[in-house]
Image (cartoon, rainbow, N blue to C red):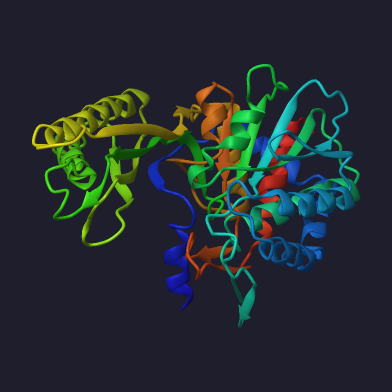
Length: 426
């Protein structure tokens, strides 16, 4: 069973594209070893283990509060109170629902953000009660991302209890809108023009701590709706059929996208959801679909986007060309998701520190990858950003059978703590 769980943990929660192992400069290895051996850091490590049972309890509490994208408010209030009780200097909720806890720095000349997202992919009426079988916890969202939220609370608690102050301000953020059609709403607000200056960004998401995301897979998502008058399948025959137009558009898109994605930087596309129609004996008045396109390269993403838009018009034109009566069909193409691309260079201080910390704690070679996470937004703006793992073992991400096993879960917290201290200037 455990080997099966280990396999699943590799695919938990987000699309993961392997890039490479990366050489760690000796200066960062030495810095990590020196920091980790400090008495106060060793005491903090011990405290993380001491509060481990409460960290799991916090994870269960947060998991059992439903929080689909756009409906995170109830969980946000509980999370904010937990951060206050953990010892944050101040806690507030911004205009879009992001929960922000400040751990004030000695100089406060920079701001480092540590992020975990509040939302899950599950509808509001999903049973999110946590069940335990043996040593494993089961519930939708138990790992993605309620484990990360519980880690944020434990990190604030550890810093406060051990009276550890960094040079720079630390913001612990519970963000909204990370999943699906949330379209990174919380991040786009946090990094808005004119917003508070953020100097570095660390998201806690994903699986094991040896995988570090330093590049963002961009995506464009659309809802396309073909519309007509609709009518009886026999009596109104000859009017435009939106389903026909949709089928034509998909066929035209695939014929263009297939050769485009066979070469060059990895680029993908998916017609993911279809809808429309009322009955078998009715010509539908509308036909719609949701489409997802992704790439690590912004130019490639814009290229397949152009092919997609062309295909939608071709599908409409083809159906309208055979209409025998009635008005032509119309099409609405609505952009419902735009995740930008970007990268923090493997040689950058933040990436090097994360590699050195992970390797120090696990004795294994850490690897860099590209993924679609909250880091996409700062990456696209040239702000140093990475996504690090939660630790432990988990699987079944985005499914009703999601699970978490607290096997060496403390390493995820120790990993985050060392990285925060290095970036925060301790």
